[in-house]
Length: 315
Ligand code: HEC
Ligand code: HEC
Ligand code: HEC
Ligand code: HEC
Ligand code: HEC
Ligand code: HEC
Ligand code: HEC
Ligand code: HEC
Ligand code: HEC
Ligand code: HEC
Image (cartoon, rainbow, N blue to C red; front, side):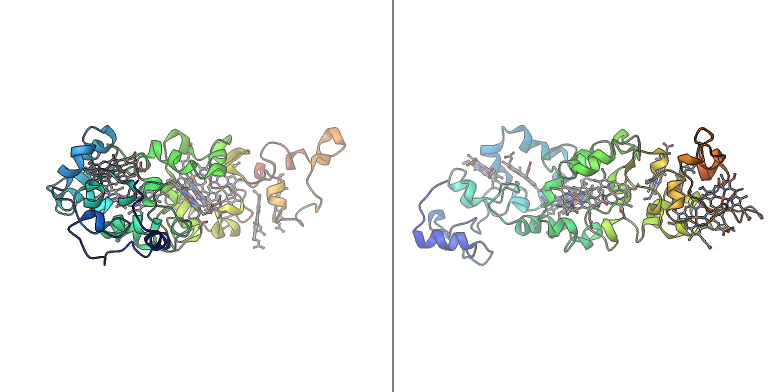
């Protein structure tokens, strides 16, 4: 970092006005406005690699799709390093001035939106259609908050390693997926992105499908029906009874029967609350309502029934 700016120039730099594409390119790098400048390096990647060519992390990008020069759309078929890092002549001429390059790193002086713009220039379409205004965009995430571009394999793209990239910020979810009953994310059998569109979606919680149930049905098609005898809450929202991530009870249940069922059904056959008082040891005679599967001892078809006489969800 060099401090050769005047105080006035410093104020302009601090206000962020000077960073932009309109500044005229100057022959003399020292006379460029503060910020990155607009001049690209003379030799592209070769200029950069003269100084960065020994850095194994930097070089790992040559093992990725981005380095495929046969594919006209890739950075290395075009501006190369500077497709993502922006014009680099000023940085190079100054012997590596960090204040003159878009580092794409979390501690960069370049605003997040300007960093992401470099990527979105090529990746605007497809899954990124919903990026602007998504929870991640609104919370100032950079593309590089999740993606490792200088790595032979980007961990966030693989089922087995994706969750760790998310858990860096989502601590509560890390705890949920450790619970005794949980979707087997920590065994790499499914990924967060099987249920979520992390670049943004119109559904709540950035779900991959428009509703919770449609998301669940992609894998649990048997719960979709149609059923002759439907159980209303199942058709409405699986999360009325299940946690999506993990729970301390079997089958990801939010509560155990009978409590689970009694949270909606209060006035059913013998209209008494089914609690521990029903156990023989406590003088009751309704053990079947409380032990084992409780209500599901008899109402085993909680998700709906196709049996002609399954109206009470018992067969
Ligand atoms: C003359 C040597 C030299 C050249 C040429 C050079 N760099 Fe650098 N670069 C450096 C040095 C030294 C640093 C470390 C600066 C620091 O940490 O203050 C650096 C740092 C960086 C950083 C990280 C900045 C940060 O904030 O951590 C990036 C990104 C970078 N260079 C990209 C490039 C690109 C792209 C090019 C080609 C356009 C390039 N460099 C050309 C010397 C060079
Ligand atoms: C596809 C976009 C892309 C291209 C192309 C690219 N980089 Fe990067 N580069 C990034 C991102 C994103 C980061 C931030 C990495 C991080 O946070 O770990 C980065 C980080 C760096 C760093 C800082 C590393 C550190 O740990 O401090 C250097 C130096 C660097 N790049 C140099 C280069 C050079 C040299 C080239 C060309 C050979 C290049 N980059 C090509 C996206 C790119
Ligand atoms: C000059 C255009 C360009 C720029 C800039 C660019 N990319 Fe790419 N990117 C591509 C192309 C082309 C592919 C290969 C797509 C394919 O094969 O389908 C790709 C692939 C990817 C992939 C998938 C990699 C894989 O192994 O499947 C990710 C993730 C990605 N880019 C992220 C980024 C990020 C993050 C940035 C900004 C730091 C960025 N890209 C900048 C053109 C670009
Ligand atoms: C919250 C983490 C996260 C952020 C932030 C993020 N991504 Fe991704 N990205 C992922 C995950 C997970 C995948 C793989 C699953 C998928 O495609 O949804 C992915 C896949 C991709 C792919 C390859 C598959 C495809 O859809 O073409 C590209 C390209 C990509 N991201 C670009 C970007 C760009 C550009 C940004 C910044 C605007 C960005 N990502 C921000 C997590 C993230
Ligand atoms: C750099 C931190 C960071 C990383 C990494 C990250 N997130 Fe987020 N995520 C946030 C923030 C901040 C929010 C918004 C506040 C909140 O809901 O917690 C958010 C929100 C979400 C939401 C809720 C959206 C809503 O509308 O309620 C989902 C789902 C999500 N992230 C999934 C993921 C997944 C999956 C990954 C990994 C591929 C990931 N996140 C990686 C920071 C991060
Ligand atoms: C089996 C599908 C599924 C998987 C896998 C999944 N989620 Fe979710 N997630 C959901 C559903 C459904 C919701 C909405 C819950 C609700 O409506 O109460 C949600 C909500 C969220 C939220 C919003 C806050 C909250 O907890 O309700 C975050 C953040 C989140 N998920 C992050 C993640 C992360 C990180 C991963 C991977 C480690 C992940 N999810 C894996 C289905 C899933
Ligand atoms: C990407 C596929 C996928 C999606 C989407 C999905 N699941 Fe699962 N689900 C699984 C897998 C895999 C298992 C574990 C099955 C096993 O261990 O035999 C599972 C298990 C379960 C279990 C039983 C857990 C246990 O401990 O017995 C419940 C309940 C469940 N899922 C509910 C849901 C709900 C609710 C949703 C929607 C929010 C959903 N699933 C979405 C793949 C998925
Ligand atoms: C009214 C409460 C309720 C709703 C709503 C509900 N379930 Fe369940 N689910 C249960 C109960 C109770 C069990 C445990 C079954 C048992 O003990 O026999 C269970 C078990 C499961 C299981 C594991 C055992 C099996 O049958 O495969 C899966 C998977 C499952 N539910 C998926 C779903 C999906 C997907 C939805 C939404 C379409 C959903 N559930 C809605 C109460 C419910
Ligand atoms: C979120 C609320 C909710 C939960 C939790 C719930 N139910 Fe239901 N259940 C309903 C609704 C609503 C109906 C439809 C009632 C109607 O048509 O009069 C229904 C219908 C039924 C019926 C058929 C009733 C009839 O009149 O034909 C049975 C049996 C039943 N539920 C058993 C259970 C059992 C067992 C559980 C626990 C595993 C349970 N329910 C959990 C809301 C719930
Ligand atoms: C011993 C078997 C058994 C157990 C255990 C049981 N039920 Fe039932 N349940 C029945 C039978 C049989 C009927 C049908 C009664 C009828 O048709 O008049 C019924 C009917 C119902 C109905 C429909 C009421 C109506 O007016 O038709 C609901 C709702 C219901 N049970 C909920 C529950 C809940 C909640 C639990 C757990 C607290 C539970 N059941 C435990 C046998 C059982």
